[in-house]
Image (cartoon, rainbow, N blue to C red; front, side, top):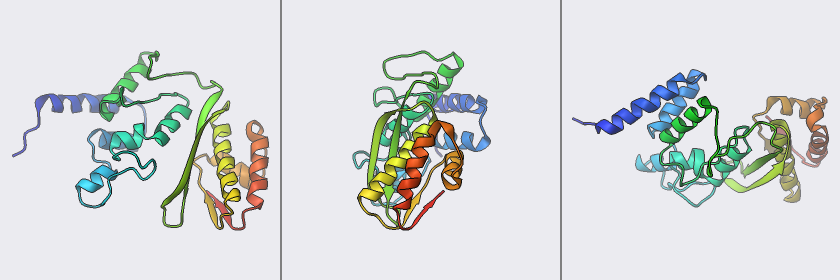
Length: 220
């Protein structure tokens, strides 16, 4: 019979109680629950289950790919957090576990925010952001990556700059068949249909010119 440490059990209940109260879709709650219980299929967990021979993060190639590393501490993850509207920047010093970090963030938001040396919460229009580009081959293996802090006034502009940078790399390396993936449907539709999106118009025009130089391309 397996007995769980009482303090650990209480911590998990407290974390789940906080996660359950946030107003997000059920699938997000389930994802956070899995993250807090360390059962996401990240590199370290796959290695423990003997489903993978390499527990190292295949993006940064520096650290074990734990849940904390994958979602918060990898350089690419941190760039994403910094570029987000909330601009939280997790560090090794401030992340003892992902569960505690999530609870702390939820409570800070409810309390109206606040700043400290390691986590910065700011309004949407800060004028700064970050882009991250990952290029994979046809088998999903990472060929190269790129990240950079930029000046931008909206998430659409940030995403557009990331796509433009990806296409510059593709053109410079003279890559063949290319699929650009973005989670910003509005931007993708504007690029494909050549409709006007005022806040990123110039960048979109650059993207369309760059795409003409790629022999086989797609965008989703």
